[in-house]
Length: 556
Image (cartoon, rainbow, N blue to C red; front, side, top):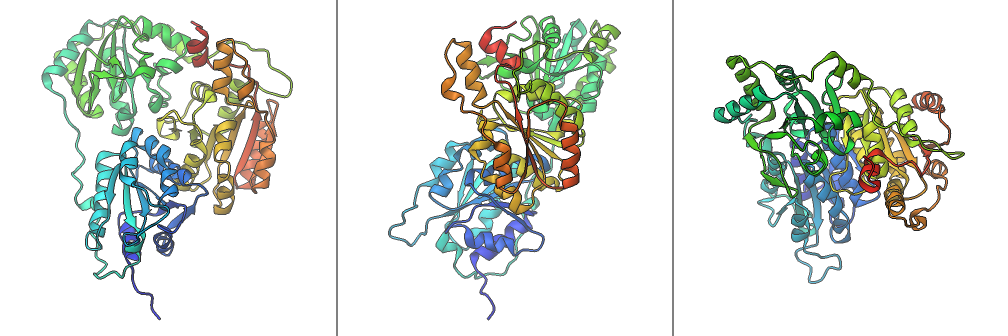
């Protein structure tokens, strides 16, 4: 007997019509029928996570890697409350996502997993759309995808389980949200403000440019490089735009907390800083101390005069990064403004080429490695066309300062909420998006252990990626903070254990790395195996990253 089409089937059809080809889910009573319906659709890749937070974090990584709307699903009650951190991260990172959240049944007098989902969702910065009737169900799906794309944030679509099991009374005709989305536009800057910036450039002798995620999303690299040349400015990026100027001889890598000593020296002498598609917040500007004598300009679609407790700029220009930069460069040419800058010299170019982010020496113990040297070895052997996913934690600063030579779209930094434990699921999402195994995860031991059950997901789903676990035997950030304040770190040092053995137990190839020089051979083995692999890299917990030494130890 033919199966009656249910609301869950119609909803699955609508999601596929929205272009969804990958779903990350953990099934329970309130979402299992829809998830099963999704799995029956042709070409649909359904990845079953072991934790609801991880399903959302996987969808987050997938969206970052593809630019599409990520899709995750949870059941109601405790299944939903597990994803608050994942929603907060995606909301702060402006990640478009739709979460199909099964809700408790409308018709039940009592249901143990009932909870008011709306205030939880909206408190994270996500939008919330409840499906209340069958007749509006598909409209609500369209609204969710429309809002996720237009506002670039996660949207929770709440659907009661008993409503999902009702018979579908209409034809399966669905017009996707793309038919309603406004055409992509590039807001142009006010010509008067462009002239003001040109005046500032004409007077500047040591101008600097900082480009952010908005510049990356706008595709403004070439235009910013042209402006840099016209203005005689050096180039740098925010953390989230690392790699944007890879290969440019006048690029200083990351500005702010992760900058090298030489970059800091140049910023300290700057008299004009132009931020493009960047918030110019506390980390990027070191709370305003990075360039104390410079006038500042912000070109952004949503400039803010006061943000994170700081004055962001002296002049704000509301414009798309590409459109704004092109307008400034064209106006400089029209006015015949030549660069007065003394920054683009062969001597500075050569200093940039030989600059090193951290030259401090540490005494390294036996059976462990300097994490900085391990990062350099990783960087040398993993091809530059691989995607690199980096979670949060102390090692994060080491990774971001020592990785070089990759395009901006190859870095996926999951640090938007300051939460650890997100790197592993995000890497699974990126790997699912790429499908070629060219994904490296750099994660800490404490972070990995928070969601180590997803190693089983990797094995079961056949996800291919390489995981380098920077294992200092505890929570590195707290270890160094305790030591910096003269306290014993014993309460946050737990021992390294055998993470490679744990990985092997889950069916993932695990190897312990406790000496430099091993990684080239191990990488050849990983490539030949054509599966997932985990390297448990035992690192010395006395090595303090450059950013931590500045912030917690007062190092200049």
